[in-house]
Every structure is written in structure tokens, then in C-alpha cells.
Image (cartoon, rainbow, N blue to C red; front, side, top):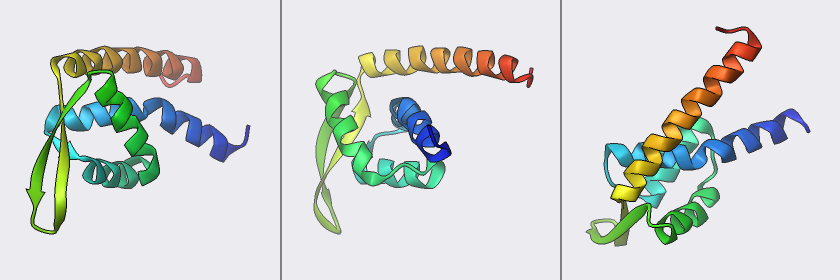
Amino acid sequence: MTDSANQIQLKKGALELCVLALLARRESYAYEIASTLAAGVGMSEGTIYPLMRRMQDDGLVDTRLAESSSGPPRKYYRLTPAGRSAFAAQKREWRSFTDAVDQLLGDR
């Protein structure tokens, strides 16, 4: 696997956790989430919309429509109680995984 393919797989693996983390702070609309992820971890906008649909189908997020001063209404996403639980569980799993990798790399 090439370095760029490795990067893509790492990012895809962490994408849901990143979205849950953003929504744990406050509700947001998909373009804002995508822009934050693009700036922070280099994810493309196109990857966020299918994930948001899946998270909604899985009951992790609820949505509401709100008027926008700059165009059509925006769909805002917020975590459900199940989404908050999923975030806490995924955060624990992530920390455990990264601690184990850091140990293997000799960073701890």
C-alpha cells in the first residue's frame, strides 16, 4: 500500500469519531463539518454526506432544518443520547488503540 493509500485508510477509520467529536461540542450542518475536517485532517467534502446519512439511519444524530440568510435552509445535525454513548465508547477505543501503537513504536 502506498503512503497516500495508508493516509486515506487512516483518515477513513477516524472519520466517524471526528464527526462525533465535533457534534459533541455543538450542533452543526454538514458543510461546516466537512470544512472543519478538511482544514483539520484533510478529508474531502464528498466523504461527509454519506457518513451523515448513515449516522442518522443508525440513530446517532438527529436533524433539524433552519433558515439560512445565504441560501436554502440548512440541515443541522446534533448527537442523540445513542450518539453521545457511541462517542464516549469510540473515544475510549481510540485512546486504547493509539496507546498500544505508541508503545509498539517506542513512543511510550
